[in-house]
Image: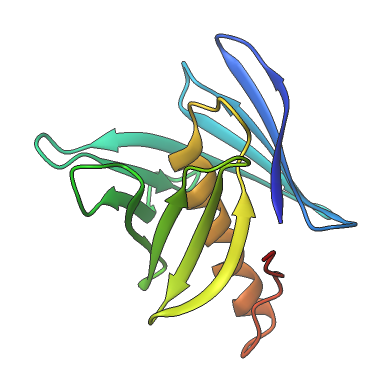
Amino acid sequence: MKWLAINSNLHHEIYELWTTKDKLLTVNYHREKGTLRITSNNEKRVFLIGKEGFLRTRTVLRNEYGIRMGQLYHESIEDNQGRIEIYDEEFNYLVQNNFPRRTAIYKDAEMLVVCELPPDSQSNNLLILLLCWYISAAVEKQPNSYPVEAYA
């Protein structure tokens, strides 16, 4: 899988999540408003994204009604690994800082997916959190299978 940065300026960013041949998601992120507009197949959703906490900051994902759906926080001083909670499911992630930059998502010590991140993106936490949201949402629709493929 791969996140592509389609368009970016000071106020607005557009990303797409791709497998080797199919586009899975389009994310339209407005920094100032803290809103995400996600399009997947024929579904459209609006989410709110923000930061919470003082000493241990978290990136928090809320639905359009303000209800917390998930959060991402770092487990060490470095921001290349941490934990994600989505719909009471827990994931771990590890960002590999080689080129191209990739993140690996784990659940219960089992690797679920490796996804390439856009170069020079300031929104990696957001993209990792949305990747886990997508995995959780797809699993709810098709239990017992994660629909994402891993790159070596």
